[in-house]
Image 1 (tube, rainbow, N blue to C red):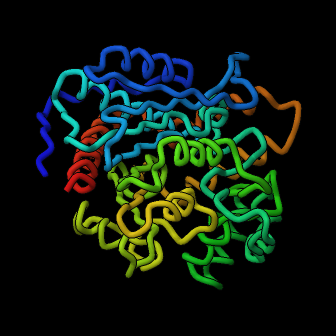
Image 2: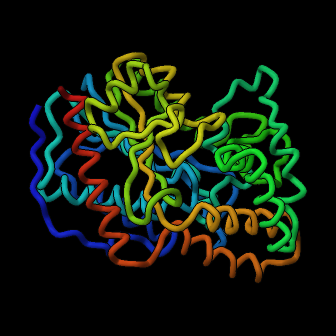
Length: 365
């Protein structure tokens, strides 16, 4: 299957300064499409720092009866939505200018700001502290136990940065670096104030995805899902992370569609360790053996720096009366997950174009 794509200049001006600007630019770009878009709006509880309402916006582009669908998700982790918005706005521009054409029998489903509260407040989580990418578990059953997190919880909330680093380093030396990263970031279900909290009920973004799956009968179509993230891995590189089991049909499709750059956490080949409750698993359940879900993760700074900026974020939000300090730290969150470096932003847009075209070709073949 040939997907028509013509290289055009990369404009890093599509990176928005904040959530309201991102939403306005995204909606404005829809009005220029040569395709009749079908837009859905999902209001989210809470409001932004300016008091404005929050919502997840979704657009279906292409044949409503298409048997193949490429789903592109932005803002699963709120503050990571800056790059996700830029990628989607860039993609919409390519469609508008006929630099990219969607294959016959294929449609695009763009999901913008899946965790809008976190996007607006420069946090990864929702207003209740829930990390959407740890939320896809069966809450009718006992939640997964995470004893390693409980061992580290006091260290994670230690105000003294050097003491916290010492305790984390000791844990890593004792149990291994992968065990440390899994203990901190693998997911936990007991501590709403803590990082990587999976919650105790389906979060806003999960409910949106479940509704989209039902509304568009996505279980009956062939799916290629690309979930856009930032913050982990080599600076500026877009790692294709596949959380399908290594010997599964989904992993085989990932290698077929995206090539040898695909990495698998369960095989130990990824910058990401295996995690609980990933949004991937919700989509895995409906795509069967004919579809594939990948995370396109754009690296920024070191994992140690990632942990530091996130732990400080959770420490500040566990307190009250420190709005000024929170605002200062929000700038650091945006710097980590959305570097202002033009070269980084160019790399993000170029790699995203490449991977989305691969998804269109793969799902349409």
